[in-house]
Length: 302
Image (cartoon, rainbow, N blue to C red; front, top):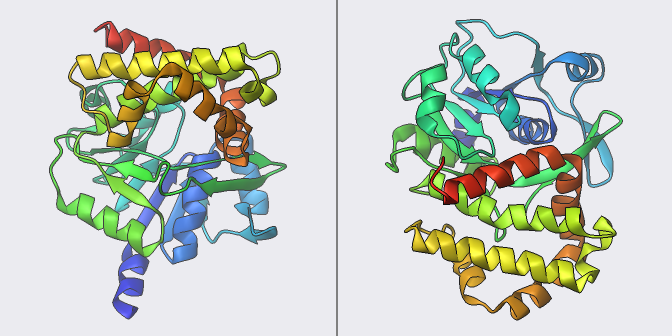
C-alpha cells in the first residue's frame, strides 16, 4: 500500500556494526526502501567504501543501497540506531553513541549485563534491547546470511520495563512492512537468559566433539548437551525466571534420553550447520565467555 511505502521511506536507520548481523539487517531495510546508513571500521570500512555492501540472494550477487560511514556526528539524527556488535565492543560503542542525538538504540547484542549499565554509558531511556534472528558469514567481502525461521527465532525486542511504547509499536510496524519476522516480549532480560541457557550447551557440544561438524553423530556428546539443557531450564524455573518463549519448557520436562535423540537430527541438519556450527566455531571465545556469564547468573553473581 502507498501509505506503507511512505512510512518506510521516512524512516532513517543507522546500523552500527558491519559484521554479519549488521550487514544483513542493513540490506533488508534498504531493500524495503528505508534510508539506511551503515557504520564500519578498519578493513571492513575500506571494503564497503570500495565495493559496496554486497550480499548473495537466491544465488545472485546483489548490492545494497546504503550509505557507508566511518564517523558519526553529534547532530546526525536517526529514528533508530541498530547496534550490532560483539559484547566486548559494546561499551566502547555505547560511549561513542552517547554524543549522538538519536533517541533510540536497538541493542542487538548477546549479553546478560544489566541494562542500567548500558544506560549509564549512553543516556537514560535510549536503550531498546533486542536480539537478532539471523545467521551466516561473510566470504571474500560477500555477505551470505539469512533470517532464522519464524518458528525458531524471529528478531525479538521489547522495552526494558515491558510497556508497549510508541517507539516499540513503530519498530514492530517497520519490521512488518519490511517482512522481517519479529516477536515482542515483555521481559527481554528473561528472554536473553533463556537464550543463553539454550545456546551455550549447544555450542559446548561442538567444542567437546571429536569431529565438531559431526557432533550430532556422537551419542555421548548429545547426551551431555541434553543433560545441560535440562539442568539449565530446571534451574531457571526454580529461580522464578519466566521461560520465554514458553516452548522452552520442553527442555525442562522431557527426559534426557528423549532430548538427546531429538538433538541429533538438529545437529546434522542444514539449519544446524548454517546457524549453529558456523557461529560456534567462528566465535569460541565469545561463546565460552557467555557460558561463564550465564552460570555466574545462576549463582547470583550477575
